[in-house]
Image (cartoon, rainbow, N blue to C red; front, side):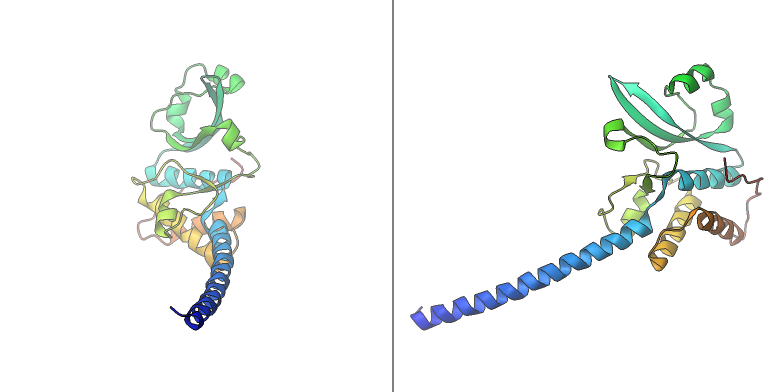
Length: 209
């Protein structure tokens, strides 16, 4: 390689590097925008969506499910949790007064675990919906792991209508590029139920529960 060839190759390399750097910056900005869309589309206020899932389970499984949230201790560490539990199993618990007073974890039959995490990483379950939740089937559906929110532990493989509903409202949020509010989520659930040919028998709905 002579002098002129070397100078030319250095020049070409610099130009190509600039192009690649510029393209890399563009892709980074695009990824940030896409991640923002994913955050809004694939996540939901944890208590709102859990209560809606509890209602869907109630009418499809013909048994009343309730969300249970609190904390327990294990090896000196505090863990926060949220379960969905058939009310009949919850009502059969012994020492309920002690459970409510101290927030001890109880053992339930047929429980669906929504969240169970160490307090330091979870910062407690926010009863005002400060925390958000996503679902593993959504992450698989959209081929991403770039959603910086807690993932529901229960996969709902035995409850395909739950997965279908979650996918539906997620698509609605992505199309709007904003999260549905509480009222919109409940309305979407009502539309979802009414769209089914074999509609489950509905129960009296109290959104404040």
